[in-house]
Length: 212
Image (cartoon, rainbow, N blue to C red; front, side, top):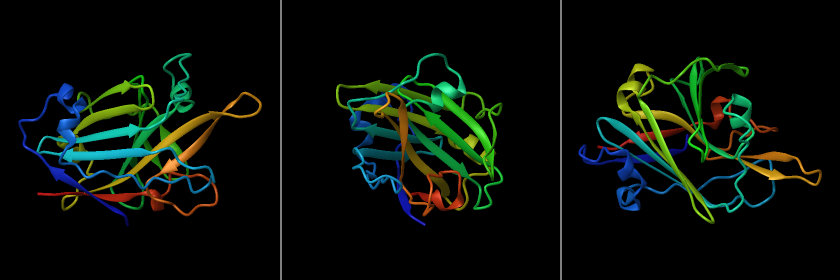
């Protein structure tokens, strides 16, 4: 499995507003090896960073894209699913029974749900209350989504084993086709080696190693 090393930082750095500051991320490793295995078009640059302390896992997606599509008809599941977004999936093990999905857009909308194999999704499920926060900003040529997830909630969901979290890191990019419809390009850190786009499969996950 692919590995990403999550560096540890001082516990005093907790304020959500601080994690919008690039200085906060200076110690973080920068993950850039994203691909769209099902599409031959070049993938616009994505930089992902993560840090942790004994209270939180912090994450930062910076997506270099000047044409971001957001479906703002409402805040429904369908609306978020039809928008440009970034995603983190967490699993206990390769059985994916269950695993947990976070899909987030530049409007700071979160689609959080519990999932089981064969596209069995529980959209009524919610991440433990007040254990997840995100913030976003849109610039002329990019957007950034940052957030923090409590270590307590990751442990409650049995997602940390020997300082390893098994994670999928993804992006959905929507572009207008020749008929004027917006269609997704699916982008992933780990190539799941599937004929059709599929993040909801064990082979699309890698390992986050919490460094000490």
